[in-house]
Length: 115
View (cartoon, rainbow, N blue to C red):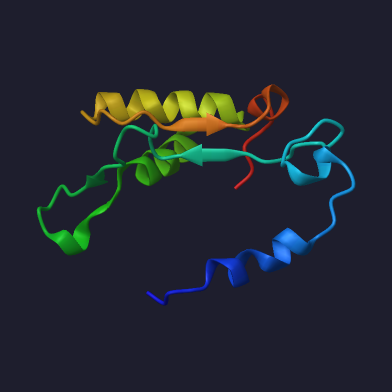
């Protein structure tokens, strides 16, 4: 919990020359976005832990477990969109209220999940 001088902390970024507005923003026009994020839940939710034994040391992430289950039951390649849809279905079936999210371009949503 160090207290940093915010002016000094941001100085390298503020001193970096920006020739065009597009250079300053991620995902700008003309840049190919290859990012894919699978989140454990929506921003207004909490990602749950599963703990069937009741022992805190045996707890694991409910979404992570659902992801592994879906992948192990998949009979071949699965798209990012299909994966998140199946994870949501499985979590709901198991009584979890969290809804994992998929954040990417439409093109990447239909791409095959790579682990």
